[in-house]
Image (cartoon, rainbow, N blue to C red):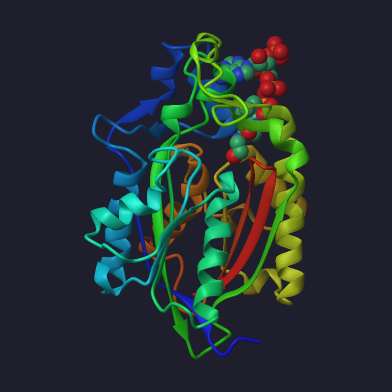
Length: 328
Ligand code: UT7
């Protein structure tokens, strides 16, 4: 048992100004607002503009989290960034964020677990804090999925958006606050359900580009089933492990995958729909950024106060899935 807990002392988020509405998409592919809203709950998403990238969105979110925590960048001991739409193949997006915050020796690295990435990074950051290795750990989820989305594929382009969210972790003498439970899972056998090709197996070349294989590919139906099942399991496991009744859970902040997936899982769990914080209508699915953006909004809307218990659940490419229970 560690001597200290790892608590969240500040949250921040940032989304680009540019909006891509369902009507905009209906001019690009054969789709319509009614179909998209009914099947996903998404009305619009934010899209990075010229000069914006994963690291710029991440840096803005990080700066806001620092402000919320009344800390300065130089106070940070570690920066973790979860992303699948990195600034470059390398260096890591976290290195670009550290540099933009004016840091020149703070350790920084990326965590790749697709839509589960933020929970993986949060758990990693908390482990460093609980081991008393680092005191102030910045955990970011940031994506510019628009840069790897195929806007000729109606089955996927309606889903994704850009944005970033961040939290800062610190040690606390109270071990019953902060990240009190988490579990991480992966099954690489399901890699082809959700993937983006360019890499050492298929280096990018003219053929790849001609076949539009440089973009994300998803098998939506199969991911849908996987997500509903995992969502339920993850919530049940978290509540059982922490001996929490439904009344003791203030909010569930799920990966913003699809309104229908979230509603159906909440119904099967017998939990009221309002217990899940959902902002997918405004931002779509922003992969690793979706939970920290939603968390920051929930905090700013006064939906989470000190002492409240929140459960995070995520599932996505890998396949990966994860949960975390945080007492604010
Ligand atoms: O975070 C992890 C990544 N997220 C995901 O992978 C998303 C998980 N999956 C989903 O959210 C849903 O599966 C989708 C929203 C992607 C699709 O919804 P669905 O209810 O599973 O639809 P479907 O793929 O079974 O397609 C139903 C019909 C098909 O037409 P036919 O074959 O029945 O004639 C599709 O061709 O809807 C058609 N369709 C569309 N129609 C209008 C597919 N995309 C569209 C579209 N607009 N954008």
